[in-house]
Length: 182
Image (cartoon, rainbow, N blue to C red; front, side, top):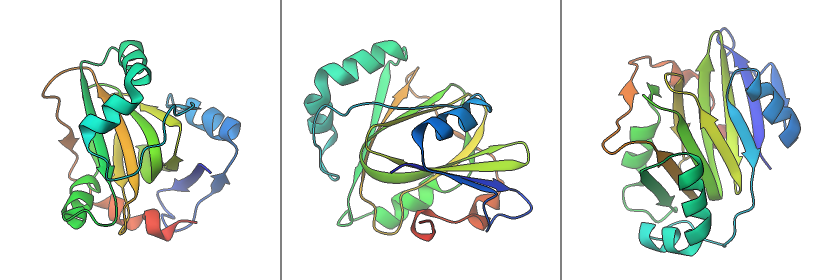
């Protein structure tokens, strides 16, 4: 079940609102120009599956989404609790950052926590299988895979070599991580 927690920056440990219905999540995020929807995942893919297998298994679905989002590059994050560099991977994702183009994430299996900072609020989405999240270019965000990651996520990028820009804001550490949420 997808969960959206909305925090005011003055109370990062206590959400003002918690939503669990997809329509309510989509409406709340749409008010901030963030797109959320749920799509069918055509194959069952286990976290830890190598990128080539993930893209081959999702074949036509990935190609259709690539076309839909004008993506020239795919990134696959497939990690399970046995991943040898899970701590380093998590540490590299938790810092707040922005992207030069829209950030398109498709949750294939497992779960992860995307936090989006807009104005005085942080929107923390626990995304799960079938969730599609599109964060507009330039919006600050960070991602948590948890201490025992279990996730397959596909990102669609519009150009080769596109890199995130770290904001330097350490406020991401004030908010609950994936393991701290319900």
